[in-house]
Length: 360
Ligand SMILES: [Zn+2]
Image (cartoon, rainbow, N blue to C red; front, side, top):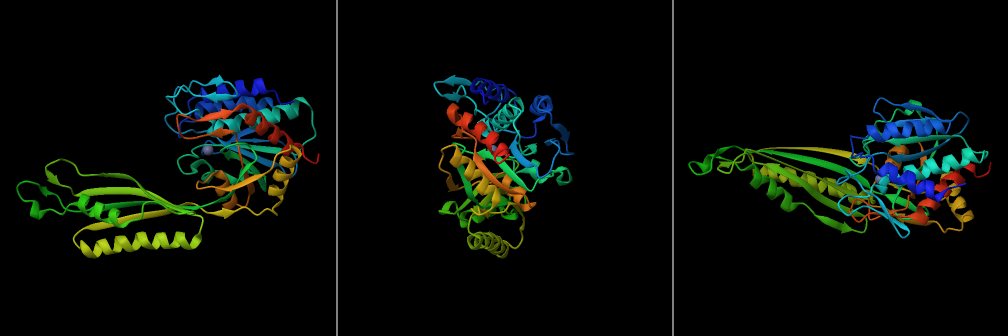
């Protein structure tokens, strides 16, 4: 049986362990014995992802990520009414530890009740928040699954991610020429001036229902009284429409090319990388049918919504693992106002239990 008190305690224990991206080892060491206690064979891949396996055919992959965003150190969770909140100075870490806690509680209840169930493979990844890095480095030779449930959506468990955009990261470096700003500025070529000129030509913010564009980083110059020789800026754009995505890419490249024409003495270099690919959920896919059927049995209406973000599910898809991303009961994630609704958390664990035992 799902035990709400144990689940809340388990969640609070998890968020008290600091695990900003790239510093997941303490939480991994906490999770390994807990997974072993459930009778799973626990392994690490070379990147440090935690992979826990049950023997048997056609296992179902259950996944969540171990890392959290900042400010996420020294999290002090407390229960207020039917919510779990932080003290307001940090995030809560429900993204994604509500998912981690729900998976463990779901499996714990199955083992205790000796319920017949589909074999599972649990994958707790690193570095999801810094660009799906853990999933991208996952050792696929250790993965035996063709289907997965990814616990990494916001809101209640029946909120299913229906589509996700393609995401392009870009970094631009502008090399100008340094000169003393007061003595002979005409000998210089300001990299900051060129970079801001480029940025002014680029789109910003929400472009349409499916697309956004952002320059989020800029750095440059060395001292106040020199014409700056070097400036770099970075950003990202995403769209759930592949034509818009291609247009945005072209717009970025054209803008850079025009700047090269305008500032022939400067060197302008760019690096573009697709971090994840879009998908539209197919309601006829068997993992989607399984998830929606289980929700139906639990008396919940599947609430399928598009998302502007990516999850490890995007990477799983690229690697041939059909999956469905469900809500894990946290809200306002990545803010200090983040909160987990306890009845939703209990439902997430119950969903985990039922999706694994359905039809067995
Ligand atoms: Zn997440």
